[in-house]
Length: 164
Image (cartoon, rainbow, N blue to C red; front, side):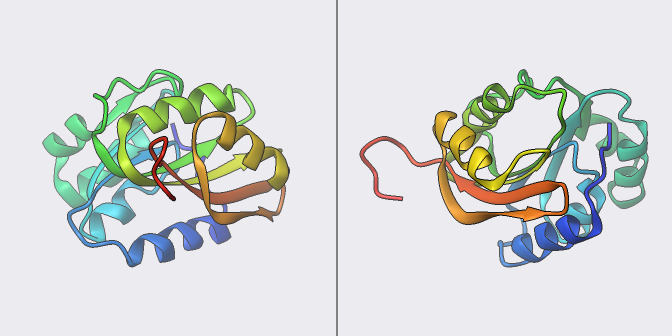
């Protein structure tokens, strides 16, 4: 499952979420950070393409095997299997094999209105990530920047007619 984030991206994600209140419900999609997020006190759930064993094992060391088995599931990025408005935050690592717009639309669906979405994507220039995020119905909350061969940025789910 894990595409594991580059160290700079991982550090940026963890620093960003360090300012978020513990207990917030966070979805980690193919980032390899579920155990780190659980250690920070988040109600963390994780999914991504199979296999999910490594992520589940790491989270099991923090929350126990039974909780990790419930919280780490295989899922296609464009069909996550969670209900609408479930998460306060999402952290997403996008590879080249996914449809970025469909994935971000699905993430938008599963986060609550006002939620933040941290995104790192392979082989996307910052302006392209902004365009695709906007097309998916998200608003840029932190400038998208290049990070090696990846881009990363923070988006927000803002409802139509509401200032972001």
